[in-house]
Amino acid sequence: MQIPAAQLTAFITEIFVTAGARQEVASEVATHLVEANLKGHDSHGVGMTPAYIRNIKADLLKPHAEASVHKDNGAVMVIDGNFGFGQVVGRQACDRLIERTQDTGVVVAGIRNCHHLGRIGTYAEHIAAQGLISLHMVNVVGHNPVVAPFGGRERRFTTNPFTCAIPRKNAPPVVLDMATSAVAMGKVRVAYEAGRQAPEGALIDHEGLPTTDPAVLFTKPVGALGPFGNHKGYGLAVMCELLGGALAGEWTAQPEHERGHNIINHMFMMVLDPASFGGLDAFRHEVDEMIKYIQSSEPAKGVDRVRVPGEPERESKVSRLDAGIPIADGSWQELVTAAEAAGMASARIAQMTA
Ligand code: NAD
Image 1 (cartoon, rainbow, N blue to C red):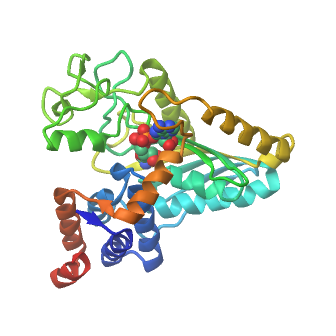
Image 2 (cartoon, rainbow, N blue to C red):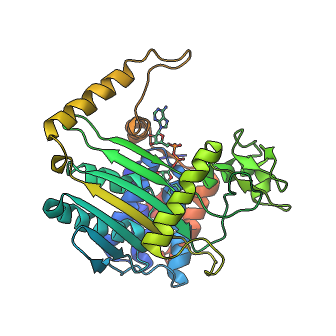
């Protein structure tokens, strides 16, 4: 089914309000999740709602928590998310860094103990809208690892995203926003449930050999997701784990820490004001000319044109705002079940989903 973004946002907002979140908090979380769907990242969209409701009920996600400053040395900050909605405490942390960058030109920060931050590109876009550059390296803890290291066969970390955005004056920002695993876990689950094969190069079996059988993630003997780009993606995932986890969060995926059904993100971040480097005009000129140069490349056979990072998401948003957001029947049913679990009356669910 295709659901209009506005209807989906209203439904998800009401689910979180019913679960005890304040209206503005619920609305911010729902807007973030629907935006992820609009931008084509269904793995980080409204499909996360059942897990969030489960974690509110289990007191793992604190719907009223706010970000607080744990340490402040001027250009170095540590901000604690206090296990609040990542979408709220993550954005609050970004706002503090944006403000501080006005004074210091550069801020390096650890943002720790956030319940799932969702689509990291959202924060990069928020910061880029202020004319600032940001870089984000994130780890994921609180549950069992899913990604094997390059050359290994056992799971050691999760999909550790890396994100960087460069603002432009008269054009949308360049936004690289990616998992360091070969594909998102959610995409393998969709293939498994549909009886399809996973993409080549994304999975290994229990012996560490390449496979396209998605069952290796869900049945025994277990295999693992692999990193993107072999040793290079693996190396980047390690850096996300060490900078995001060990430095920013003091909590990595190593087995001293508790693992259950929690989804905690720690995020190492840098925010840079391009004006505090060389000349702002020269920077903007070089970015624009380089992007023009990149996009002037003759497209490969079968490709319509060369895109820069961030463009596929913007294209998806235009088309999904028009056509609605595709939601599989099973996922829709899970949202209805989450609404019931939150305490929403059946008549109200029927009204909101009609
Ligand atoms: P992806 O592979 O779809 O895209 C990765 C990047 O490549 C994007 O910046 C995109 O704009 C760019 N891109 C894609 N096709 C392109 C093309 N043809 N030309 C130029 N650029 C192109 O994304 P992904 O790796 O599946 O990540 C999905 C989302 O999952 C991200 O938003 C990420 O933040 C999120 N994520 C979050 C967590 C978490 O714990 N919070 C963990 C992992 C991933």
